[in-house]
Image 1 (cartoon, rainbow, N blue to C red):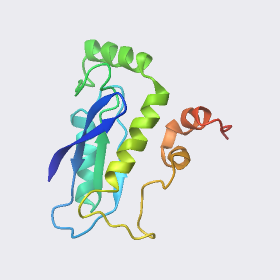
Image 2 (cartoon, rainbow, N blue to C red):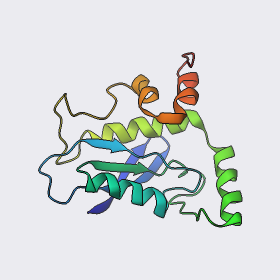
Image 3 (cartoon, one colour):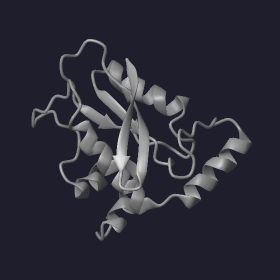
Length: 148
């Protein structure tokens, strides 16, 4: 089951794609970070696959300031160029704030499992860097920590 979630930021509002498990009473949450193509079919299918495994998956629209609801094709040269243009204009500091706002909003969702043993969301903004895969170095630099 999927839906849209609206999140209020200091300078506007953005949407998130939310995929939920079909029959779970409560579920842990994962945040799915978009690529340069926006929250497109590929990102939505990743979120859906997490939902099939029993997670609530949230994919925030991180390029909303440039073009809300960006949904580009990975197979189009024109979309690739457009995606890189959005990426180059992307404000990382604001993006981290958007991810933190997504984490905060996720903590208020119904059917969220809040058991300490199953909590998949970082507890502090600083922890975002530890849970963000290949984007770890960029976020750690932003947070004033040396990357390893």
